[in-house]
Length: 370
Length: 224
Image (cartoon, rainbow over all chains, first blue to last red):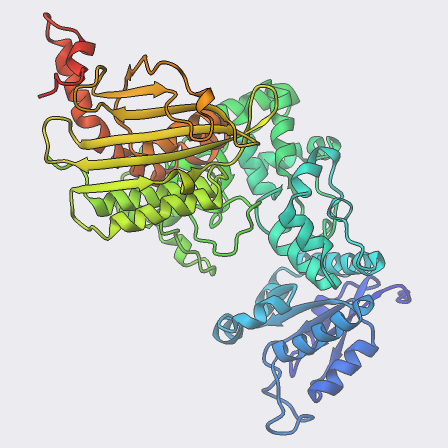
């Protein structure tokens, strides 16, 4: 028999699809109960009284509602707003709110509802929940534990402590933009939103495996062989939500590589970096190859935001990002994704920055040369 | 011959402003000053003559850098007047050119000032020249007692001057985020055509003439 006394509590609210409560749960760690739709104030009260760690809401809660009078139905965003209001009044009871809805509804109803976008920590398509169950569960556990840590901090948020930043990173973290967003937050969900979306889920002070591989000039598969050495070197991110998303201190990765190679990494081609790192680490590393010309002799330095392959500046264009923080790295799309239209069809609304837009027509017909 | 129209020059300046802001080389106010000038040029559409001015009071301000002793300095770029006229043969394509890079310490006191000029009528020196010093309002006692030497130098407008500052003072950021950016290269190339084509032709011709020298051929008053 499983001991569930220590499991964190999750609540899943939907007007159908009860089974998603099971899909989202990690037995003994984070267990979701299904709540049928009730009138909105009753629903909010029931959720608060249950003191959950994570609440998952379907977006359309207004389709099958036997318990709600006609004209009083509501959407997930309305309930989320009420719950967030409660958290501002009592931050010690704050919890994560995620949206779980099917792809069609997300595209048709949630995407245009921009006022709702700030309410949710994360958004999952139901198809993702069923298709990538372990990843989703891992992220939900990270949210649950992160909110627990935030509640225990009782509004005394120090960005360096929160992000568990090594001393070498303190200057980068104690910038006005990061410090103000974190230190002045009046509830855990405001810190969570900033850390998740401005720091963890976009390149900047932290990078994921793909961007780290590009910095080191190696294929992502080869990068995995370097993970133990990079972890040993203290470059792996260990702060808030770290268990859900593997991240690396970007400047740490670069300095680690430079210390091994004795000079600036980005002065070397991917081939040169991979060869030198292979020699120093005794690990056979494959060089990253340009998505545009398949050459290992390019100066790759970041991952294309669309295909995530290591890419070079000269064969990529800037992405328009209206809300990119100043400390973030601007995202770019490789010419391969542009010429093949992949960037228009990957489910993300990527737009080329207007500075670079005039080059698209030329790229569409450009031959590929090393 | 026209190498660039005002609309394309304006677009190039806007790309340069955006790229340097994104790379944290330009400050927000510096990028705004350059962008304002770019919008003004864009309105002139297909025109091949235009004048740009960046007042000292609203100069293009770069992010602060450190001098060799670790003290912060501020770099600003201003232009009293850059008048492009691609129809004139005497000093193509600039009817006038007077741009300055001014470096100050944290107190606003001058560290150094460089200016890139087109020589005035009758002035001794290369037609287009680079010179140290010049006027230092509020710090007359720091002004250099002599104006020479005037170094023979190709004309540079605002975008190319931004490139010079970026590459010299922000080398790591420039190499990493800007130098090979295709949109940046396209913008810089269009401005290079404007600034360098006649100058390079003139210099190249000078190499083929045995009874003169390159400097003599580039001297003020000796251009056709």
